[in-house]
Amino acid sequence: MSSQKATVQRYTDGFRSGDLAQILSCLTEDVVWALHGAKTLTGRAAFAAEADSARLLGGVHLQLVPPPGRYAPAPGDALVSRLDTFHIWLGEVPAA
Image 1 (spheres, rainbow, N blue to C red):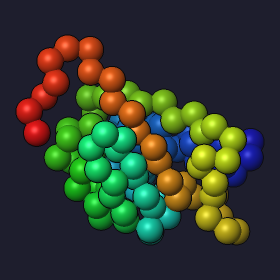
Image 2 (cartoon, rainbow, N blue to C red):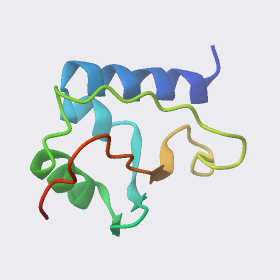
Image 3 (cartoon, rainbow, N blue to C red):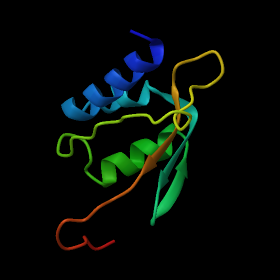
Image 4 (cartoon, rainbow, N blue to C red):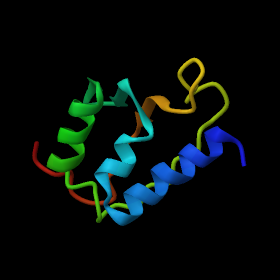
């Protein structure tokens, strides 16, 4: 298994188990998380705060499938440096 594939597997397993530390270990320190239509966050601390405040952990099961060229690892590493999230609301949009 490639190091990139192993990182994606660890990241996905972290979301499924609600393990924020595991998720953060897959991200570069300066990760960019673009929440399209809402905001863009930079850094592990901002990612952790948003994941916690949005109650993403333990309740939402995400599958990260990196399209070619979109989740390029940091030079010499296999950590995720950018995430793009698109929300599709199937019911009422939650209040901000």
